[in-house]
Image 1 (tube, rainbow, N blue to C red):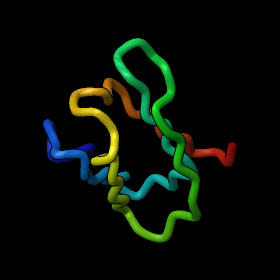
Image 2 (tube, rainbow, N blue to C red):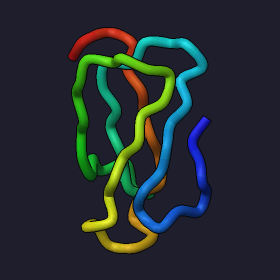
Image 3 (cartoon, rainbow, N blue to C red):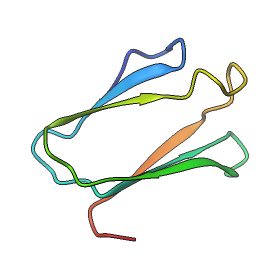
Image 4 (cartoon, rainbow, N blue to C red):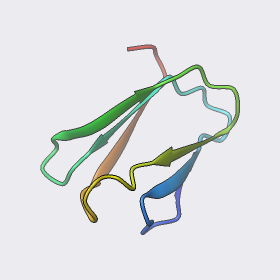
Length: 67
């Protein structure tokens, strides 16, 4: 679950216990905006894309296997 939606560029992804290794944010055309990789240590991840243009994020893809 991702919230808040819409956001001001800072949002949280609640993985509900699923281990996520990377997240790729895409615009509405499918172009990658940013890719974030990390070692997950909690059920929630906060992401800050407030430096990106407003309305740019169309999709968030989470990866359960390391990229």
